[in-house]
Image (cartoon, rainbow, N blue to C red):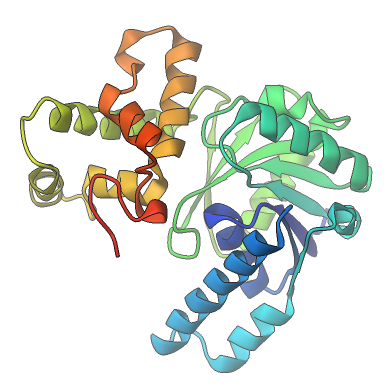
Length: 283
């Protein structure tokens, strides 16, 4: 199956990033959100990101114009009817994703593919919410989407070989590299990454080192390009907490217990970069 038109449900950090890379690859993109304000923020983010690429001479003004011309934003979910592939990129909340996927399934063509950008929820369970579980797959992008090259592909129990092949071709078309992971909580990358970040929060909580020193230590001592607490702020503390809760309840193992400080930060509304404050402060 050749994918020419991509629907993206959700205009937030992940959604607008996915929409941007698809539009830059010459695909028609339909970005859908329930809020005009959310769509406007998503469009502004994409425009600013493209402007940065122009300033860096990574693309020229014509390429920016072409990418924007490929993008349509709307609050009308029915616009997804023309999509060959729809990627759900909503908040990491199972009930919300299930509801959105049922809506998408009722709108898109029978031969269209549906994917979820979930970072932790079972692809098999999400696929079962649709009438086409064989045409459903996990496409886990990484933040910031325009910068990071990886897309983690996750097959559900029902995912067909044809869907897997189409997803791999799509990832290559948009200039990314795919890896395959089994359907298990957190898949491969987040199964390693998120508990590591959670342990950094425990180190901070126990007063072993400051946030600045934890990040500096992991950058200078372990060669990480960004410290774990700064990365937590970039990902969003609410997202990290949601993933850790999935691990904790799915594996029934205390080693995945979310750090109490992480939960308290989320309760306080300190969500990281998107709120202006997390383990570090942002203007």
